[in-house]
Image (tube, rainbow, N blue to C red; front, side, top):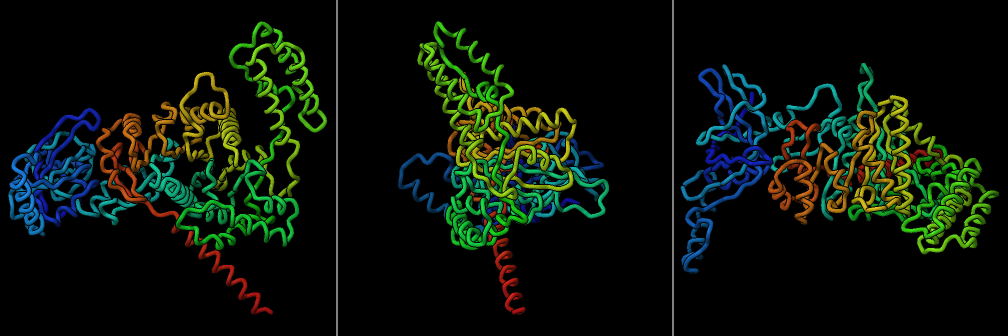
Length: 624
């Protein structure tokens, strides 16, 4: 039975057609201070509609998106003699203050703007149920405010049964109302997080990853058929998530901090990976604790993170891995990195023929310490041949030489670290395709180009692997933090790491879902994103976006009115406007929620590790 807040009634005053929300409704309530605290953005109202008849009542459910107290003695325009205007305004204050729980003045109203949820309450013979809205609300009809249990029921009523769900947050206006999300729909149909500096974007990413993994890992032991597993691959450009997801990196049996370049790690950590001794271990822990990037709330716990790093660096169960890749052949290396732009001059045909001959001849020659000089000698011979008569031609081979230098450092000069701390692409793909467990993989690099290139390569390999094999399980989700660095706006003629990562991410977003591949993006720079990606996510989390161009881009992509983002300017850290076509109970209706602080979760985990370590020390002392 759906119930309402007693003693609070409004009146539907106006209906206006709206191109984005279908209709916009204006509802007035008598002003009281109590009512001002009950009616907030996100509140649900029930208004009788034209489908009602003598046998049953139909009430359309509307969501409040804007609220404003109005004193009609002042009006909307403070024009007139200043003394009179000020005196009238001061008199109005008494009306605001004196009407605590009972309205006594007709000149004070609470004006609400609401949008349809496309649901209605049908009441017949004392029983009620929800169904799709069948007609318009009636102007002049009473508007009733749904109470806490009924609000939670309506918000979550459209979720499918028998799939993993989790409470993503609580309604901003009513912390007792939990808003649930279908985990599979969130991941399969992609999601996006848009928030300006200080909104808590990384914090929300950490919270979502935690809740998704909990939802998939909380499987009943005798469940039939077994629940699908999920793998999350997070590309961490800023190096934040080794802290924000330290709990899952430690406790999940299928977790990994994959480091693409040796330069990303402190020297003491690399030395420990080469020779895992107790002395080197202590130095490595200190180096990690000192050089890791911490959020402000966790800086004071820097020393406690040693308990987490101790688990991650243990050679018997190592979770930190250096990426090792098979080098390309000499031919493939030239084919990949010789990308001429502009004009090659009159010798264009001869230059291209020389390159084709090299690729054909050296296509099977491995790039190693013995063959590398051959490539450098060939590049030098091209400079000495006289064929490179234009700046563009010389620049194309200079870029190739730089790429060859980088390849030499990447493939031939790496340290010989312990096998426990290494991982290849083949091993990673195998673990991502393992259907028996859920897992987390955080990928970091000090070099953004390497991170983009790796994202492009891994995405392409996984897509082709799934497409050719027909596999759709487990669900693999690629999360791109600072997504504008991976999916920037298209640049004419660009063929670099930006272009490669953008192409693969777009392929995953458009075609990946049918192969069990999902995408998540998070950024504060919406205007720099490729516009094509904006229409792909079906679920948005939006916080403060001061730039109008950003709000317009989001509103246009999701198909809602830009004015609905007005409420986000009042948001505190952790508040988000959640909108989804698939993953929540209300389809395409913005819901203001407050999400948990990931820092508190990580702190609780550190407390657990610290207490566990202290107990083990006590046991050792007792034995002695």
